Length: 112
View 1 (spheres, rainbow, N blue to C red):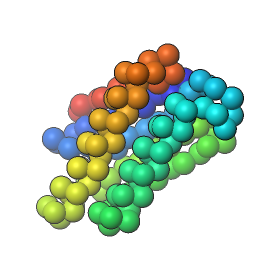
View 2: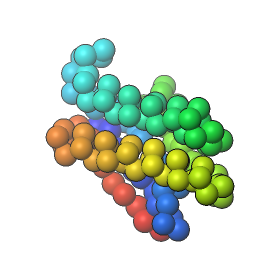
View 3: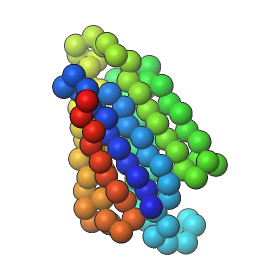
């Protein structure tokens, strides 16, 4: 099962973590894993390339599927807005995947 967690603090998304594998199909045919992977990779790329945010990324696929991303604590206002827009869209997409594939994805939001 995939465990996806969004961490909030001070009215913003600070980080997210995804662990595990969906195991909803054979390797290379797992649409749930593909959906979560595409959401995560697109979000990280958007944060880095579009919003120009120097996020901290820890990716350990060989360790059972692990991705953790942290935003810097302070950003310029327009950069913050871009980053939070991307992250909220990501959270909404994960929530939808978890709702539709609850046997394979667990979604949590933690507010500090």
